[in-house]
Length: 109
Ligand code: FES
Image 1 (spheres, helix red, strand yellow):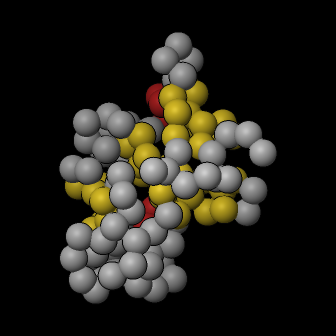
Image 2: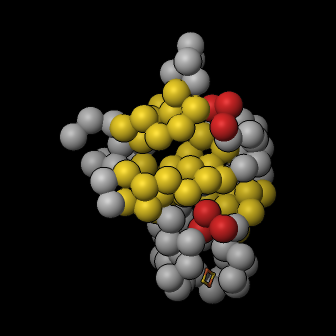
């Protein structure tokens, strides 16, 4: 299955996060404060909480429930209570149209 278009860059300002669903995968689509777009599994590894309800801080997404911050590039938690990473999916952005695509069949390196 090929990467899927999920949103436009103009719908996601730096520092914002939105929830999207692709083929049954819940994704937190995040634009970091430098403008780069990331796609993470939308479920905190500590409990069944949507990370898309959290806050973007620099290049991290903070779970609102207990405050673990997840690195947007690696998916790793940077502090307790979460200890397991969340899945990060490859993202591409069309320079001309601003269309954001996510590939849920692969994980980001
Ligand atoms: S549910 Fe996310 S840190 Fe606890």
